[in-house]
Length: 268
Image (tube, rainbow, N blue to C red; front, side):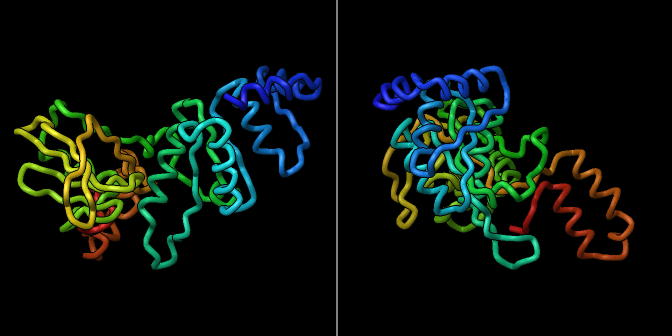
């Protein structure tokens, strides 16, 4: 690739050799680079030493531009975005499932140690997320020929933040119809239909969300969560300890605790 030739030329400079040696030794290093050359330097370093990398900029527009620039250098497969969430707990605005899934996908790649560059704005990183030990970001993969109890599929999707609706026509929605499950993976551009024969996945097909028409077969589909909430056994237990007494005199709170027990965040 062109970036490898550029990197080889750049790293003839002693200053960059010192930076690379420091990074390889696990040390903190600082390099002053003009704004126009920052993505090039990050891409060059990544091309020479691929490793999990976080690239932070000052705003979402700048992050989008940086991601496109980095992808042009190192390839789209090696770049992911960690976008800012626009919803807040104290506002009525609903979360954007596609944004949450994109955040889960990007963070998951970094945690797994994938060789990728995660591009984020500073504001996107300010929002707290569950501890990495909760593994809330883990995806689920359905593959043709895999056996999984059919009744567990909707439960698994609900546990990942998906909503059982009448149609899978928007990210984060799914529906069960006979022996098929139609789901719109929040990180994808189109839904899929997972067809079962008993408890075995018989076929996975891409769909047109507006018409329901199938347009192609897939061997497998990876689905990322669309919520940043870890309803682990420990978390559920702590909620009960904190809220059980109050729930005895509050029917709404009691109903919410029952939803938590079922790992449901919002009613269907």
